[in-house]
Image (tube, rainbow, N blue to C red; front, side):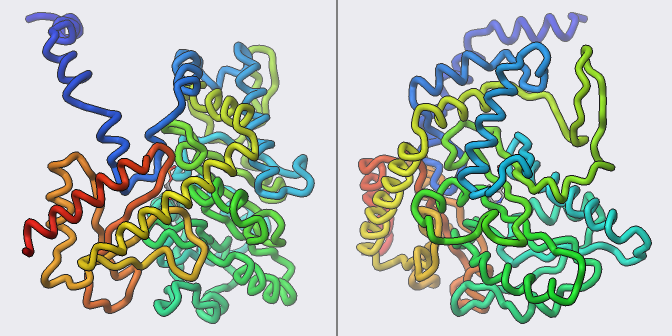
Length: 420
Ligand SMILES: *Cc1c(COP(=O)(O)O)cnc(C)c1O
């Protein structure tokens, strides 16, 4: 029998396999027409060059490539500035594979910090999240043996039920999670109000319950368009923020960050190891990954700067307005966001009459035209709604005016072919 490695090399040489990979899977077209995804599908030509140039470098080998560590420091400080950390030296930041990993790390730090301050406690630690929180919190809590308390949304206005929050806080609460741009509603939580609830509780306790803000998408949006919206390190209880560079940071997958107040990075979790003559103290999660992502993020920060990002975000909201106005011309659909609350650029919509106009059938039809329109259960958005399904369109860098009109034409085409 042929050696399997040689065998597979032979297969790889067959042109047909290369054709399949390079031609049939049309990454550009399909990725750009993926309406529900948040992750970057478009980078400038120069950014792509940077990305490719650094792809053979392992970012964690800081002895061999100290430049990568410097780029990472620059990016982390840029983010701390975006999130209004008044004394950046009091904060730490960690590059991760994305927000899911950053969230895992944050819950690990929160749980450890709580334990350090409650050494004799026999209660199981709990984390307070919201109905619209990302599933990454459910996975992290399960893996780290933390109980979840889920606060229900006020359906009338998509806001937090603050009295329910108050009732759920107890001695085992390791932290509260807010979201800046929930995936099912796109809405940014009013973190300031949640902070006020925690401040009122702190008056009677000597333990400060920290807030973690999941700013996976909104972290690169709010600072540029809503400077007076206070959700970040300006608030007394916000001690930890995650953000995804591979969403509105404009970098291809996979890069995210965790920014945390040094106060919750207790020393007992850190490992000191000597590596090639250098002593490094770091948190336990630290995995090999390509330097492409950090290098590209560094390039964008240097190249675009604050004003470049602000221009791009403003342009996304203009595109969003175009999309919203276009969808208003489709009577078969109605929009749930944008609404009265701040939200990231995008649309959550439902059928205006589910018995007649089936969103899933629309989504199936669009697949044939290379569009991917994700449809999900709408109870998260609208309790007891007679309309059960909702669909999401995310406005990302790379979505052009032409594509918006093309999509609208395809949606209208579907409804008129079915119902006229
Ligand atoms: C995308 C997203 C995540 C997960 O982020 P990854 O970077 O894909 O791991 C978590 N929370 C929110 C709100 C998100 O939008």
